[in-house]
Image (cartoon, rainbow, N blue to C red; front, side, top):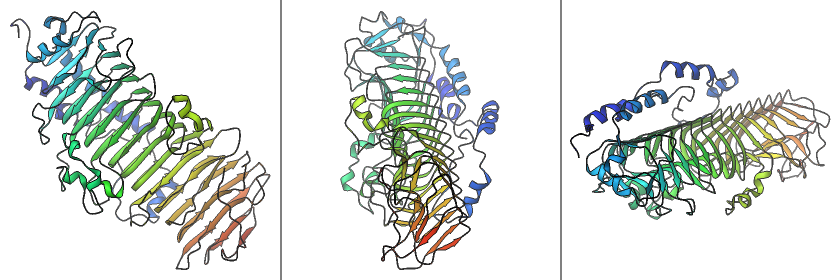
Length: 591
């Protein structure tokens, strides 16, 4: 390295941008105050949920109303990056032409070989091959950009962060990329990404802009040894791959993705995919054809998804992002303590926001529109998962969104489902599916028919205080244990195309109370306003109380469950009978 160039020592870099300095501070006063004013002040109705039947194995949800204690505010992060930026050395001093045509890959290699720890790219650097980073490094863009022109392979990254020895127990620390504008080279199909990190602790990507490229992929060296087929209900394939069975100190850590913009240009790219990581912050990003996703091992029973195995993605805060035109907006497998807050997601081929095989997770204050399958959903194990104060809307247009985006369909997209629960193999496993939908607004705005909420197997499922417009909430299933439908408001000014039950449940333990169903549009013959059907012969604890059916076209309340307690229901006749005698018609939703 030439003597006239200033040096930034690893110790200085770590002090400025290390894990403790960058990703362990408490929330700053201004942001804390703002979030406290606009956060989730729970209503009295939702607070009463604590007294309802609940899985004894559930843990504590992350406090989505506050900035996570393990992460600094974006302002704190950017201030630290600004200090480091002042130490950055221009790539020109290592022979880069920065004309967007000459290959400047060798200049990056020379800069890293010289020991530079902060680098400034102040012109378009054409890069044709991956640049390997195995130590602390910060790279900044300067000027309007583009700063990086990716002319390499479509599956490769401009920067790869990983140790040269590939030791799965060790990590590269303290890497930052900020203010970089990267584009895919003219004439090349969309592809590539800014950074791929394998075994990293302390990765910050802030205020970067990607055109026809993805932003980031974070994974773990042990992924190569993870074999789902070797798992069982008692054998965790993550442990077979070398992960600890007793702690989570072998994960990627302290990842911050802040204020970036990604326009992949076609279906589909990523803002970030992170695997086997903890303390991950994804805030304020915009993604067009770009998603946010995580993976902590297979979520199926025999692939690492059993509840006794350690979750492999932990402590995640995903907030204030805008995402569209991908398979799923925000989703992932095997996570624990994840908060998804104030995001906007639209036009997805599969799901909007989805937790798969997750524990102690919350989605709140999000706004999601038009998903081919489900706007909000939980798959596989879903222990202590909560969807609260979200807005969801379908207008039916997502039924053919895969054609519009040029992708294969996922499942059977219909563009009508607002909330869904799919146990997918966990129907007979105790205390693993415990999901609450509280104080959400669900709307179907399509011209024809109605939207719906869909249920699968559950140990406990609750819909509390939701507002639904032209959305049927029929969550009756033969594999439910305890169900709560209280304080919901359902309004229908459109007609179903087939006989339909507006609000329904089926479980040995259940409560349908204090709901209001307003029916202004005539419905097909045989439709029912509220229904409860349980064909079992064992003991039950079922109550339908204080429900109101109103509007120009009220429908009956139908009950086919022995021993059900009925009182205070108004506005419609209550029909009771034995299922075996078929005296009560309770049609399933069939839009």
